[in-house]
Amino acid sequence: MKRKLTLALLLLLVLPALASVRVGEAAPNFTATDSYGHQHSLAQYKGKYVVLEWHNQGCPYTKKHYDSGNMQKLQKLWTSKGVVWFTVISSAPGTQGYVTATQENEYLKRMGAAPTAVLLDPRGDLGHLYEAKTTPHMFIINPRGELIYDGAIDDKSTSDPADIAGATNYVTAALEQSMAGSAVAVPTSRPYGCSVKYAK
Image (cartoon, rainbow, N blue to C red; front, side, top):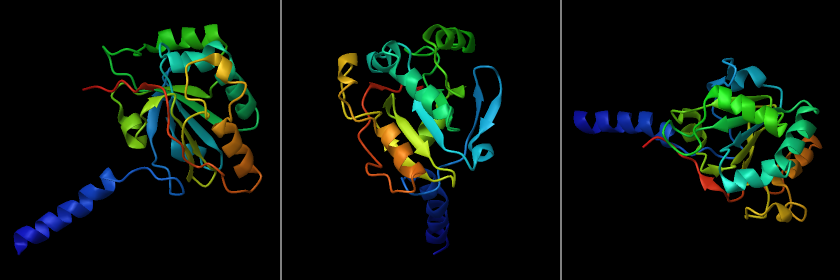
């Protein structure tokens, strides 16, 4: 009996940690360091919309949105409206996509990117917390701290920049709808891109 009770208590402790991140529920808090050495926690941005964008410089799907200027355009548009935009790199040291802070800052300058900050996540803590699967993989958190979108950047799951013009951008749609007081029409979608290169 005592053994069963101990097992039950262990399950109560472990299962919440294994629970999936779900749209409509509180987004898990995190603290991460950016490419300039500054710390950011989700809690400090309560009251603002927060976008999380998983990133890998060398991924063809990431390059689709950066080489075309599409991602930079989105970053500039939404940060100008008060949205906090975090680009997240969860590639582990020794894997494709891993970069140093200096390398990433040089890339941002060269590409004209404008996120609020780039969060470096080489251990994959933030990536695993949000179950980020691809680059890009997009998440949106509303001012109440609730996850309102989880999925692809748009509905064209290719690496061809020519497809951007005819795509429905899920990030823009979700932000516009939520800011207008409406429910997000497409709160989840299947993310597409290169797999996040977590440590093994």
